[in-house]
Length: 447
Image (tube, rainbow, N blue to C red; front, side, top):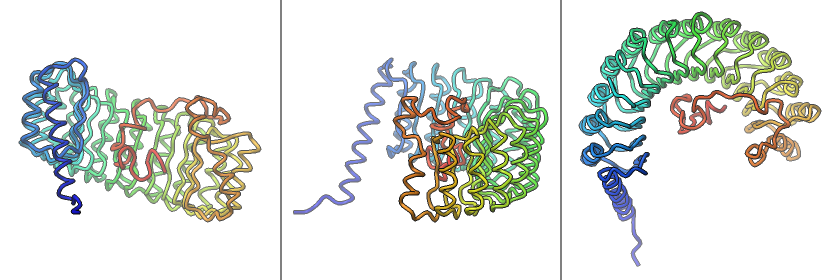
């Protein structure tokens, strides 16, 4: 008997997608009031399908969210869709990432969003958009007063594009933009300086800024840090992982943390801050009462850098999450962190692939036990812990999910602490260090 091969399975998948698109079009044309969100991600949609969807969208008045990412949409399809979006009276979110709309598609959506009355979220990530596309979007940003979230991650908009966007935001005091993802966008220190000038403006409302996977070094990091330590009173989450930041950049952020009262999340993983950078940040933690999450994973930190961080934990009563994975802190580093961990507010500790043996793990779990504390997350995977009993003990100090859900895991001193209010742990995948959706890198909402 012949078995159905890949071609047959592919046809079935195509037919299933066609049926789903056809049903969606019927609902749009009927203006079904219950249809407020459409998800057509990964449905093999091409420009001809988008044109049909766009025509149907013109008959609709109830849709709030349109998700059509990971398809085969080019600038032509984007033009048709943007034209329909521009006249829709209620649409709030458009997710069009991982297509091929290019600069032409960016221009079409720039025109659509310029004076749109309801659009608050536009995701054009990974679409082959360059500096020209960013310039088109910047022209709309000079006038738009509704858009709150703009994701351009994975597009090589470069410093030229960033200059245009930052300049537009500086000119538009009515801008409502609160979150912007510029991960893997070809940005250098020049682009970082443009963004820093916008952050220094009194009218800046930006709360979340994703700059993962760019080429920002100490100069750009220092410019941003100075803005945070100066007049900026809005930014709460900053993602700078996988850049080229060393100890001087980390020291600049440490200085800003001495006075900043709004930043709750700082991700610096996959840089080269080293022990001196870790020491500077540790000193800042002794005084800072705002930062909730600090990620220093994979930064060349050794036991020498872990020691001041351990001392900081004994003083700080605000930090909820600390990432130290991929640093060779060894058992000596674990010994340094352990005493402060039980007394601190830390509820999530990531210390995987750090060269820790059973001895270091025991020091951590023993201190937690003595202080009657468990953590929402104690990640020690990929270390040199071979003793099964010790591994069980580590696992036992993680609060089970069912207890978290029921609110019974209250042994952690961090229970009930406020977390960043922006949707960072779910729909901010691409802003969170350009991760796997929802989190890349095992998460920058992660390790």
